[in-house]
Length: 230
Image (cartoon, rainbow, N blue to C red; front, side, top):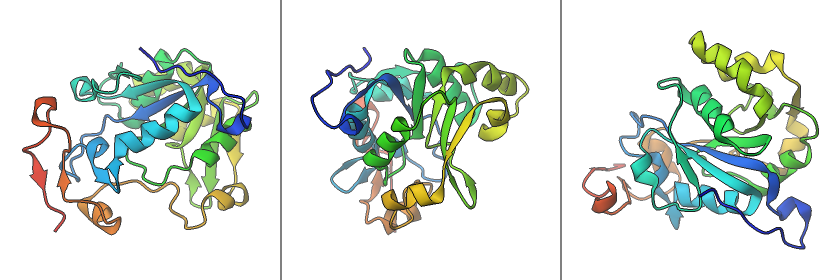
C-alpha cells in the first residue's frame, strides 16, 4: 500500500504534501557500478533508506519504479511498480510514476543522489502553483531528474516514448515550466553537490563509502555479489 501520513501542526514546508507523490527511479542497469545502487551503503545507511527517509517526511504517497520489484518488497510503505514501456530509460520511469500516481503532482529523482536536500525539495513544492513542471536550472542546463511533474505531462511524454525520443526535456516546450534558478538554489547547495549522483565505484570511494556490495541479505537477492572499490 502507498505510504500515507497524518499532517502535523508544524511548518508547512516540513509537513507531508498531501497532494504530491514522491517517485524514486530505481530501474537502471547499474552496468558501471556492478551492483544495485539503491542498496549501496553510504555513511550509516543504504541509498534507498536515505531517500525514503526524506520522502516519508515530504510526500503522502511514495512510488518505487524498478524492473526488479522483488528486490524492494521490504519497503512496505511504498508502492513498487515496473515500467509500462520497457527500456525507455529515466523518461519511461517518470511516465510510469506519473501514470500510477494518485496525486496531480509528483516529485521524481533517482535512488542514487546522496546529497538530496529535504528543505530544497520542500521549497520546490511551495513554488508549484499551476505549473506542469518545476525544475532546477543551472548554467549547464536543467536538472530534470530532480523535478516536479504534473500528470498533465503524460500525453506529451507518451508521444515521445512511442517515437523512441528519450531526452527527458524533449516535452518541456509543450508544458508550463517554472525554473528554479541558480540564485534560488545556492542557499541549499553551498558545496555544489546537490544534484550529484553515483555512477561508478570511484564516486562511492570519494564519499568514503564501504566496499561495493549489495547490502541486502542473501534471501533478498543480496550478499554474494561483491565488487571492491580498490
